[in-house]
Amino acid sequence: MRTHHPVIIVHGGAGHPPEETLSKRLKGCEQAALIGWEILQKGKSALEAVEMAVIELEDNPLFNAGTGSTLNVHGQVEMDAAIMDGRTLKAGAVATVSRIRNPIHLARKVLEDGRHVLLGGEGAHRFARQSGVPEYPPESLIVEDARRRWEKQHGTVGCVALDQAGGIAVGTSTGGLFDKLPGRIGDSPLLGCGTYADDSGGVSCTGNGEAIIRVVMAKTTLDFMRAGSHPMDTAKKAVALLEEKTGGKGGLIIIDKNGKVGYARSTSEMPICVVSGPGKIFTDR
Ligand code: GLY
Image 1 (cartoon, helix red, strand yellow):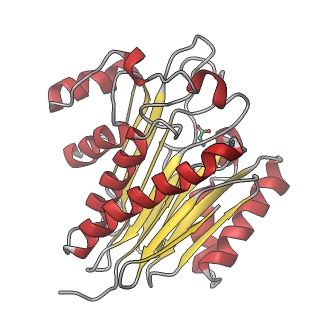
Image 2 (cartoon, protein in one colour; image 1 turned 120 degrees about the vertical axis):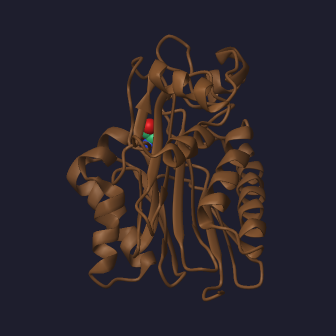
Image 3 (tube, helix red, strand yellow; image 1 turned 90 degrees about the vertical axis):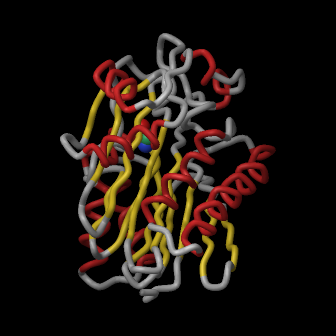
């Protein structure tokens, strides 16, 4: 039964990207949001829409996730991702995977499998093989620009969606921080930190993972929202808290259970796209 008008929001990462890439990043966010929107319009689940929208962003080399992920101190790609269903609290996440083209898809497999919430490193790759998720040479995920573009900057992609049945889902995927140590895990695959959804809403964060983890940003944001503020005010409050408590910079996107959207950033840019109502597209930077 249709009870809600679907809404979807995606972000392409908080950071300070080169100005000349901004319009392409906004376009990339729009394409991803529309892919998710079409899935929602067909009456499919928010989980499905979020996975497909994030896959689109992971496949776009302009974003720091999947193909185009930033490099660690050894010049290698190590990616994190998580996906969560707000109604059931089912979640799946992967950390430090290097040979997976779409970490969000592997995270969804972890969710569907249901035995665990977060798999890392070689164990995650073994699970991928058992689940029929193909592995690729890690070099195939590196694009030349990633070697330069992300120096000392952050980026992540994320999506929150509300489906026609009122279900909320969230997904976040990232190559993490440039020059990070091998084995470093950021906020994105940690539930409550970079990614969280429950029956009140869903939140995907972006920015300095070490700072975001310390304030448990995604869950803290939903707790603020439950206390009564509009998602837009809530987003601003959460980003201010991040800066006040840790000095960290970042941003986040929210959808609440009524389909109200919020987003905020403390960096110079965070491309976002919202699709709502009868397919109304809104972008911001
Ligand atoms: N927020 C992405 C990361 O720090 O890994």
